[in-house]
Length: 122
Image 1: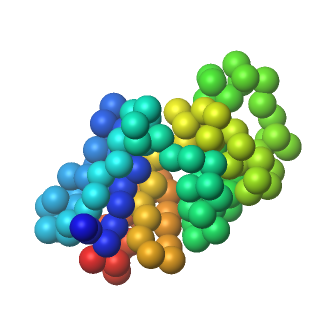
Image 2: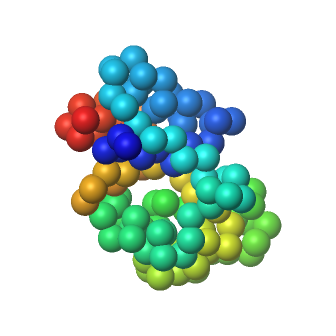
């Protein structure tokens, strides 16, 4: 088992950049296609992730058309508990890619954050 897991959406260029860079650097990673029903994170997994995420919890939520369609506003995802609730119900709203290792996690945006994380935690 690799020490780094990437929550990956194959349809996202940033997410593909993370998996491609890991391969290029020879850093073994576990790829979790978090949008597949069988691989969706639970609320508890989101809570655990938010506990080690280097970014503010609210940044894990994509602010896109779905966000607006659901009638969400920034105050609805201001706390870690709110973020966990929203993302457990709507995993497609998770910012991607997410790189996770024991005790540390980042959102791989901008893309220049990915390589230092992979190298530091290989």
